[in-house]
Image (cartoon, rainbow, N blue to C red; front, side, top):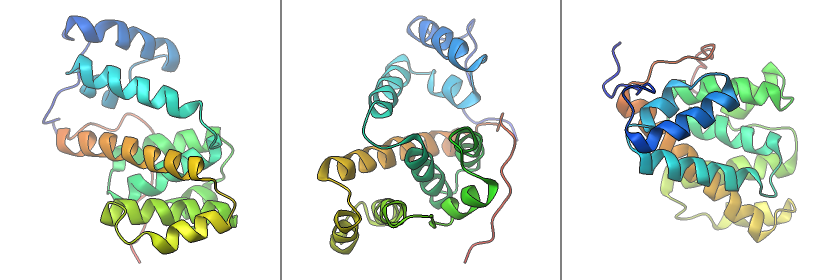
Length: 182
């Protein structure tokens, strides 16, 4: 499938996008297609990278972030982001079984299960009716700051999921397997 919104290259990128592509190339050794697609808009790419950078300095662990990324991306049907985050999750120490479980909303600890349940509610309803998920998150030891941060990760992932799907971004990571839906 040809992308419906083409990724930019350093040569075709808007002037404001070029330094961001250079930064990404330094971090990844290349510019992943999704970032190159978001790079059509220097404002969008700059805002996304700043948001992601700030969230990466938060209280949630790399493991928890990747659990959220995997589950939200699977809920949203984004094969690109599931594939990219399967790689990131493996780097964060998740096994293949844990990656598959996270995509399905399952995890090893009560805290992780509560995070995924909250994320699922936010994806499905925008957060409406989240009283039970909020109570379980607090019972699992999540602070209000952790909860707000988890919601921010859901918002960030929802943005990238939407761009990848609307644009038809070509997957440039090892493709994650399709999981049967319950």
